[in-house]
Image 1 (cartoon, helix red, strand yellow):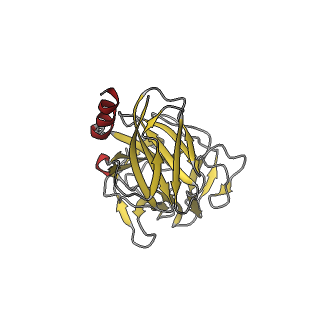
Image 2 (cartoon, rainbow, N blue to C red; image 1 turned 90 degrees about the vertical axis):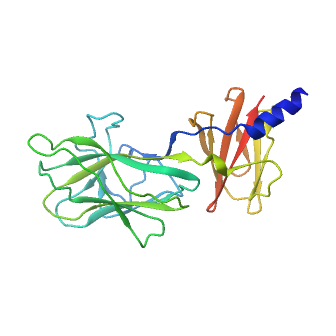
Image 3 (spheres, rainbow, N blue to C red; image 1 turned 180 degrees about the vertical axis):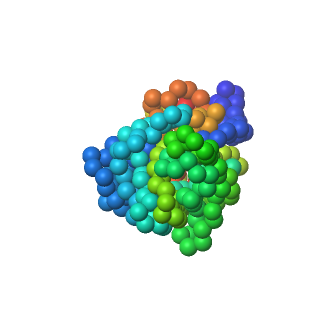
Length: 266
């Protein structure tokens, strides 16, 4: 009876997910000014990529807002218009209510926002997000920006920051994408899925994951409050021995396919 109760609890417990971090980047601590496409000190590695004509530098480090990381930031200069950085490879599948925030520094106090922020699901069609920042005397400072607009749920989201005029320089840091994990996408036992994830009741601290392609997989594990507990890559196994007893959600992504499944640690 006790085992039956545990199985029923695992199958019926659907967490009420709050906003959780999908992606964040603080641009590391560069030793020299480096074009974004050549820089290797990013917080994120493949499949995330960084391209464009902006550069990463340590001058005027971020400060003054919650979560400011200091050290490296992206400089989108005023010397020539249309300087940009494009961040690609962010998987937002199975997320809703996706929101983008970042730290921004502007070299002028003027009210106009000449740095555009756009998102794309295919790298061709871009949607501009809107935002506002303080203006007037003394506002040429770091500010935390929260954007408004629709951000798609796709396997390869691109974010583009562009300086479209030549009379102001911008710095960007602490880019953060959050969303609500769609609990309705959680796989239940008996349904055919792209991945085999077992056991659903973990006793030895190891979760085994297999797929037809058997490639490296991006793994995220959340607790019932949607807190990200593990973020790693693996080809087959994940060690969860450091997690406390309870119910968790594992999200597996491989070559554009994503699935989530509940499991219990006994």
